[in-house]
Picture (tube, helix red, strand yellow):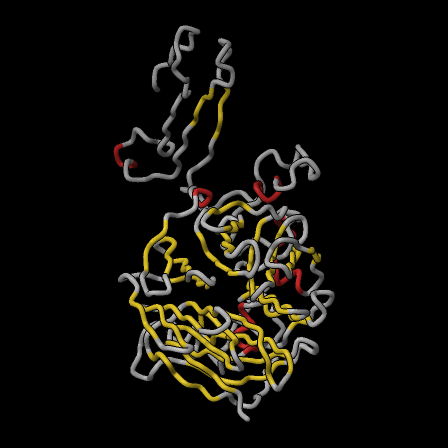
Length: 446
C-alpha cells in the first residue's frame, strides 16, 4: 500500500490515488508465486482540484490478462444511451470482436457526400484528340479529318525558334539569331542565352521581349538592351507579350499581372482597360484585347488603339477566355480565342457568336490567314506522346477543321518537346511556323 498523497490547497501535485496489486488469492504462499490469475490496478482521481473531498475510484479493469472481455459493459443495462445526443456512444461501448471495418449502420451518416469514382485508363492506346481529352475536359473530343497537305520548307532545322512578326513586307523570326526574310535574308546574332518570348516590328525598330529584359534591333543590325519601363518594376511586372499597331501608339505591351502599356515615341504609359488584360493581338491598324473584369470581354480597335469598342463574350468563348493562358487573334470580322486546355473558339461575325472546334486540344499557337481562298484560322496542336505538332485549318463560319501538316525535329534530335510550336504567322499567302524543331514555311497545294 502506497502512502496517501497530500491534497492540501498549497500543493500543485495531482493525486493519482492508490495502487493495489493482488496476485492470486494466496499470494504469500511461496509455492504459488509462479501463478498469476489477476492483475488489478485501482486509481483514485481527484475530480475537483479546489476541494478536499476524497477522490473517487476509477476502475480501469483488467489489462487484457483475463480470458475474454465482458460482452456488455458494466452499468449499460441500467443507463440507457441517448442516441440523438451521442451518435457514437453505442459504437464506443461495443466490444472489439474483430478487425472488420465498421459499416455505415454502425458509424452513422456523417453528412459527407460520396466521393466520385477515380478514372482508370487502360493502356496507352493511340495518341490523338480522344486520348488527350482525358486531361482537357473543356475541349470537345473528336477526330480531325485530313485536308490537303501543305508543302513544308524547313528554313531552320533542329534549332529552336520562339517568335515571329512581320512589318508588312518582311518576316522576322527570333531564335539564337534575329532572322529577316524578304527583299534580303539577314541574320543578326543575339546575346548568348537570350530567350525571346515575343516580337513586334514597328517602322523604326524591332522590339524583342526576352527573359533578360527588353531588347531593340535597329535596321542596321545593331542589337541593344533597353531599360525596362518604370511601370514594369514590381511583382508581376514582367513583359510577356508585345504587339505593334499603325496609329498614335506604335507599340503595346502586356504585363504578367494584367496591366497594359502603350508607347508613344519613346515614352511608355499605362492604358486603362477596366480589368486585367489576359491576351493581346494586333495586325496593321487593328488591335484586340481580352479583358477579364466582371465578365470576360473583347476590346477591339480599328484605328491603332486610339479608340476601342467592347463586346461581352458569350459561351463557348467565355469558357475559353477563363483558361490559364488564353491566345487571341483578330482580323476584320474573324476572331479566334484559344486556350491549351479549354480548346479553340472561332467567330466570323466580329464576336457576336462563337463555335467550339472539335478535336482542337493542346493548342500552343494560332494565326489568321486564308485556306482554299477563304478566311481561315490556323492552329498548332501539340501531341506530346509523339512530340509532334499537328497544324489545322479551321473555317470560322462552321468551326470545321482539317489537318494540313505535321511538324517535328530531325530524327537524330532528342531534345525534349522539340516538336512543340511556339508561334504561327500568315504572310503573303504562306504560313510560317516556329518551334523547337526550327522555322518552317508552309505553302498550300495548288
